[in-house]
Amino acid sequence: MIAKKLKPGDEIRVVAPSRSQAVVWERAHHHAMQFWQDSGFILTFSKNCRELDQYQSSSIASRVEDLHEAFQDSNVKMIITSIGGFNANQLLPHLDYDLIAKNPKIFCGYSDITVLQNAIYAKTGLVTYSGPHYSTFGFDGEQEYTRKAFLDCFTKETALNIQPSKTAGRYYVLQEGSCEGAVIGGNLCTVNLLQGTPYMPDIRDKVLFLEDDNIMGEYFAYEFDRNLQSLLQMEGADSVKGIVFGRFDESCGMTLNRINDIVRDKVPSHIPVIFGVDFGHIFPILTFPIGGTVKIDANKNGVDIQFISH
Image (cartoon, rainbow, N blue to C red; front, side, top):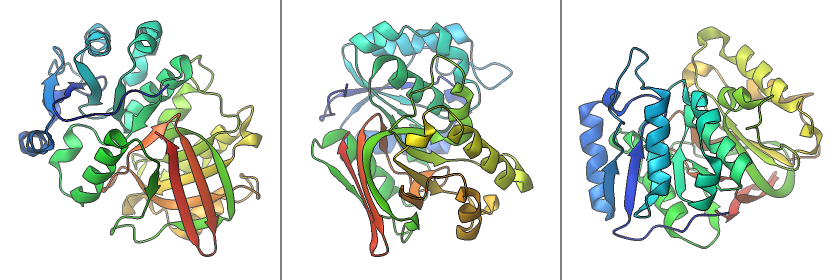
């Protein structure tokens, strides 16, 4: 199930299901507002998005109320998260998935929002989107690529051919191969919060898009290694069709050699594995569909990534 694409004049609702909108820097807020005004959309903010508690968030009831109201409002065509955080998984047992399924909307964000995106897809079949937060458009960092990828995904009906940003330069083939399948994933440590719950998507025959942020300091590679291993030990992981890794902040130390070492002996040798694609916690940021269909061809001559349905 894919929500309708955007057109000029559509209303976009900002919600804060993780950290509060109140923590967004005023400068970032100002620049983000300018982007939305220039793009021709009507931007509105949920009632409780600036509520702030000791965890820089708000009550479960407030966050759930804002999400439900946004999905129910027939004027709202897209729901975008304000910023990430740490506690979006608190909302999972409180969401009305029937309501969401009956009112399909574009739902976009990344990082901690990964739990909501994959859970909504698992429970309703609605394609959700890993992509910029509202606040992302207020920061520097090759905004042209981020904005074009975002608008292309949400305004174009045709298949999307993905090219590396100027910052990335190229994508790296760790294992050659071709595949086509539905995408799941996003922020790896956040995806893994769903394991063992009713909200984890079926991993069988999927293409995994995975990235992570450095909150472990010098132990990042160790943590990433075991998180990937945990995901690939799930039932059905032996039928995964391909893996695409995003880009990592330099502090992660995720070099080409290191990611090769991590992947070795974990991943079936016949599936394509790509490293350095433009998504993650550094700019620029690609928008991709969780539940949408991707086609990948990776060989010594290069990488072709095409989102067939989005």
